[in-house]
Image (cartoon, rainbow, N blue to C red; front, top):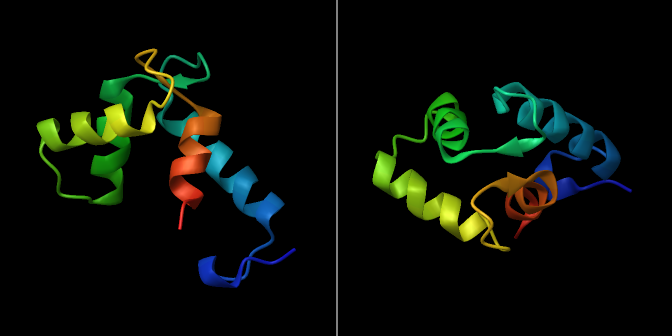
Amino acid sequence: MNDPERGGAPLAEREAELREDFAYFDDDGDGLLQVDEFIRFLDGLGAGMSNEECRIGFAEIDTDRDGVIQFEEFLNWWTAP
């Protein structure tokens, strides 16, 4: 299945790329993004957001409110329309 809105890459391929990106910014390798790791991720994208804006975004992505972002939360955020 292709995802034409996201460059036509098959969804499985896009998910694999996102897993690699997620793992790259997961400094401690625990499979979760802490807020500081997420801020570094956004900085790497050149988002130009303040730390406070990053923290607000982090809280929105952390849908189960456990203080970390699991890959599924990250994937849902990244692929949301």
